Length: 117
Image (cartoon, rainbow, N blue to C red; front, side):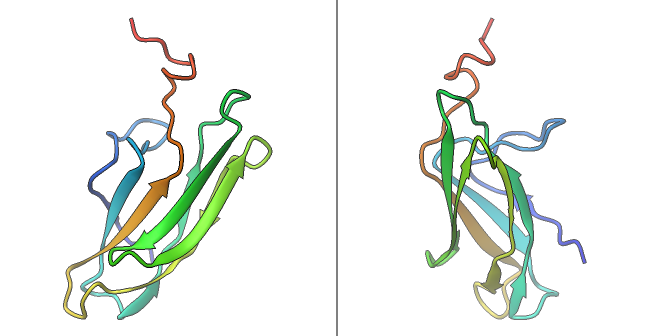
C-alpha cells in the first residue's frame, strides 16, 4: 500500500525530477492514523554527486531522535532505497515524523551546474 508523505521542514518545491532537501535536515510526515503501531516505509532517493562532491552521507532518524539507518552514496552508487521500520510517535498520532540528516549538503549552484542569471 502506498502511503502518502507530507514534506515538512527542509524540502524544496516538487520538480519534474523529484524533490530536493534544502539543507542539513529534512522532515517527512507520514499519515499514520490508519497504520499499525509499527510499520515500514520505502524511501527511494539519490544524491547530486560530481567529482567535486563525490559522496554524500544520510542518516535517517525517528521523530524522537532514534537513528534508524545510515547510508552513504557515491559516484558509483548515487541512488538507494531504504525501508525503515517506524513506531508511531504516539499510538493515537495522526502523523509519524521521519527525519533525514544530510551530512554535507551542496547545491547545484555551488557545484557550478546551475548558475543563477
